[in-house]
Length: 252
Image (cartoon, one colour):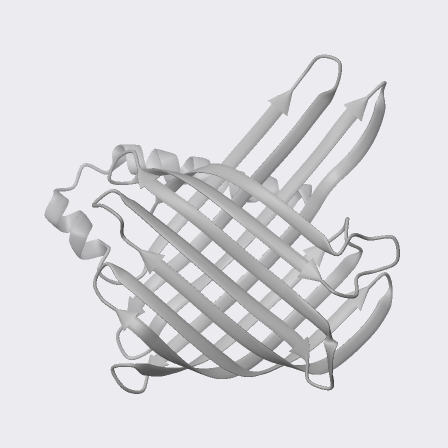
C-alpha cells in the first residue's frame, strides 16, 4: 500500500511540474478541457513532538464527456496513516479504492449506466470488495452549471472480509449532484445505498461531499468529506468510517 501511495505522490509531483511548464494560451486550455479532464490530487500531514504522526492521501480522477461513449467518471484513491507514541508504531489508516461509471444518454432526461467499484481497507479487515452492475437514471435537472441525477439498478458484490469470502446480489440506489458555483470553484455531492436483494437489513451506504477551488488554471485546492457505513462489518469493527481529506490538485 505504501508503494502505491508513493507512486501516486510521484504522479502528483509530476503533474505539478507539468502545470508549471504549461504556458499555452487560455483558449488552448479551454479546448483541452472540453473532453475528458484528468486531475491528480495529493496531501500529506506530519507531526512531531510528544507523538509522531503521518497521514497521506492521493487521488487520480478522470471526468468528462467522450463523444461516442457518453459521460465518464473514473478514479483511484489511496489513504495511509500511522502514529508513533513511546516508540510504539500503530497504523491508523490503510485503504484504496478504484471506481468507474459510464453514462449513456437515452433522452434529454434519462440515461443508462454501468457502475463498478473495488475497495481494500486493512483497518476494516476488507481484503477486497467489488461490485459491478447496470442501472437506469434520470436527470432531475441538467444545465451547464448544475446537474442532479438519480439512478437504480442491480449490482453484484464479491468480497472477502476478515478472511471470509461471500458474494450476493444487491440493489444499488445512487444520486449525484454537481454545481459550478463560480468560474473558479465547484462543489459535488454523491450518495449510494446498496442493500442485499434478499435481506435489506444488510446494506452498504457511501456518501461524499467536496469542494474544489482553483488557485491557477491548472492548480486547485480540494476538501472532501467521505462517510462509509457497513451494517454488518467484521467483528469488533465500527460500522461507520468518516474521513475529511484536504489536498492539492493538479489538472493534467
